[in-house]
Image (cartoon, rainbow, N blue to C red):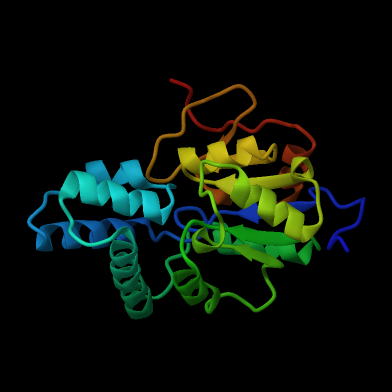
Length: 233
């Protein structure tokens, strides 16, 4: 049975995690740089931004190829996750500006939420520990899909689990692979710029921060109103 009524707009909000809800991208970058150095390779932030939004398997394969990290893809993913989890446990969950407040407001408005992340379940659970239980009706992680972002499967799976039409949902993303995934799933997409420049495109909603929107704005985006608050040049 759907978790929302026919009168709820949007039918659901589908949240990316790393870089959108929480500012963990610097943690991933530090893990990649550290692991690369231990294997005698060279890696820095300018290279790490290329991996933002990709599946962890694809990111690990790139680190094998471009930074010379030895080991299997699975071993590399688990080592990176171990380092990121350790930093989260040491420093706490680093929320993105406005994210926690908007998430609470969406839930208070009775709009279902799904977390759609390329992080694997063990790391995702560490972040979820800092969030009130039941905040997300559905959680889709990178190790639970056959095709990661930019493929539409993660968002299609989340919408199906919620029992809603993806076209009636708003996805919130910060990366080009994530935006491509949500767009291919035919959701409305709100792109929030973080580490990666998000170029203007017809019909693309773009913001500098989730502090710039509220639930009423998400309802307008779901209805087709375009919010582009970033420079176009």
